[in-house]
Length: 426
Image (tube, rainbow, N blue to C red; front, side):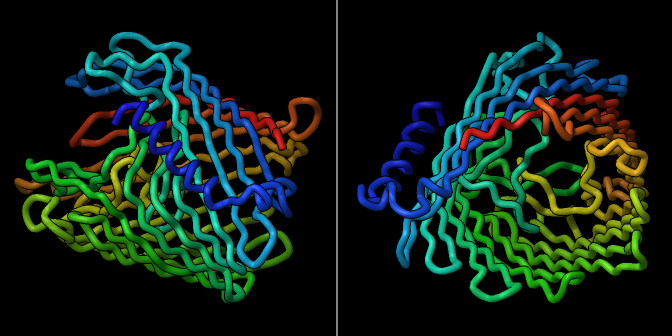
C-alpha cells in the first residue's frame, strides 16, 4: 500500500469520527478541557557488529531522529461521550550508507539502502458509555496475546477496533479485531502473518497466505493489592489460536523488601492452512521470580517450549515472554531457557533518575532437525538516566549493550544509544 492509500484510509477514519460528533458536542464538556497532546523526540544510534564469518555484511550502523506527535481528546458530555485521538510520526535519517542498513530504524528499499525519511499517520474515533470505551481506527494494543513494538525509532501501529470495559470493580475486559499492521520500520499497512523460521519449525506456505483478522478477548482481575490473574484468547486467521493465562503476585517481606512472582502459560494450536506441515502446535510455560531489597532487585526466570513448533505471535510485534530480550526471544521449538538479572536504582546513593540493569540468559535443547541441538546465550547491559529537575527535566539518555551467540544463525554485538524528550503541548 502506498502513502496515498495510507492517507486515504486515515482521512476516512477521521471523517467518520467527525461525522459522529455534532458541532454542538465538539467543543462541549470535556472534549477540549480533557485533551492532551505531546511531542516526543527520539534520537536513536544503532550499531550491530556481525560476528559470524559467513554474514552478508560486517556491520549495521545507522543514526536517525524520530518525531512522535500524539493527541488525545476528552469525551463530550452526556450519557454517550464521543472523542477523537490522533498521531503523526516522522523518522529522519541522520547517518547510514551502503552496506550498513538493516538496523530496523529506517525502511530499506530494493537496493538495500535506507530511506531518507518516512512517516505514519493515524486517527482513532472513540465512544464512551459508562465505564466502557469503544475505539476504532489506529490502535496500539498491549495485551498478553498481542503487543505492539516500540523497540526502534518509531512504534508499530494497527488498524482495527477495540473495546475496553471497567464496569466491574477490579476487573478489566478487553475485546478487539485487528485487520492490518504497520510495522516499526514501514509506512504501509499490511496483512498479518505469524513469526516464522526454521528454528521454530514454522514455515509459511508458498501460496502466500496471510491474515485479514486477529480477534482477541479476555480479562484481568485484581484480587487485592498483591495478586492479579488474567486470561486472554487470540486468533490469527489462517494461522493459530492461542489461550494465555497469567498470575502476578507480590508478597512484602519487610519494610524495604518483597518477593514478586510472574507466572505465564500459553497454548497455541493451528487455525487454517497458512503454515506448512501440521501447522502450529506449542505449549509455553514461563515465569520470573524477583527479590527486591531496597534499591536492589535480583531476578531469575525460566521458559520452556514444547510441542511441534515454537511460540506463535504476529510478525512485527513483541512476544509476551519473560525471556524476550534485546536480541533473542528464546521461543524456538523445544527450547528450554533461563535468565539471571540484577537491577539497581542509584537513588540509593543520592543519584535519582540513574538506573542500571544487567542479565545473562541461556537457551538449549532447540530442535533443529537431523538430530542437531541448537543453543544460544545472551548478555544485556542497560544504563539509563532521566533528568529530574531544571530546564531539561524528563530528558532521558539510555545506553544498551547486547552480546548474543548461537550455533544456528548470526552472532551479534549490539550497542544502542537513545536520547528522548517529550514536550507537553496541552
